[in-house]
Amino acid sequence: MAYIGNSYYYSLTETDEESEYDCYYDCDSCTCDNCIFIKDLHGCLCCQDIPETVTKTEDDGVSCITFHPGFKAVVLNPYVLETAFCGYHPHQDFDFNYRSYRYTAYRQLVRWRWGYLGKNNRVLLPSCAIAKIRETFSQYN
Image 1 (cartoon, rainbow, N blue to C red):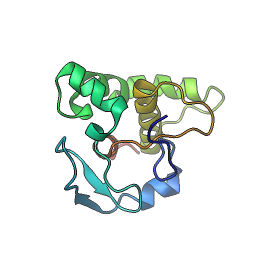
Image 2 (cartoon, rainbow, N blue to C red):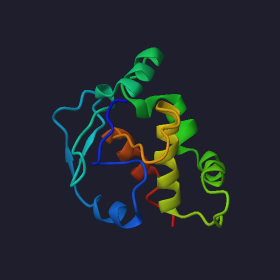
Image 3 (cartoon, one colour):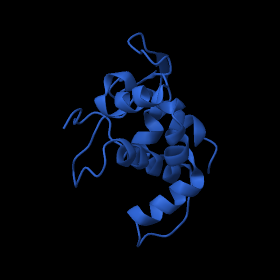
């Protein structure tokens, strides 16, 4: 399976998420023009460098996975995320905050593009998607 590693996973802990997002830099290697360098993570991994996301962008004629209509519907829709969270954590209290939305959005992206990975299998996420998820769910408290 491509891009399995230990640098950035879809399932960040709350402390990791808070401490790692305070500094963004432009990515010179980005070909989708939406990536942001993420300090202390994998740096910058463009969606156009990941086979699981590039096939979707090419098939639907978009330059970045964040422009794909499926990204907005599956990864950024709060109602979808609330429903998905209940499926991922059926015995957990349903109290959503921005961390819950972001965590679930990362999982939804993985499920949408890679499918079910299985326990302890992780993939690196594209920087553009991480940035869009953080931007979208920064105001939820």
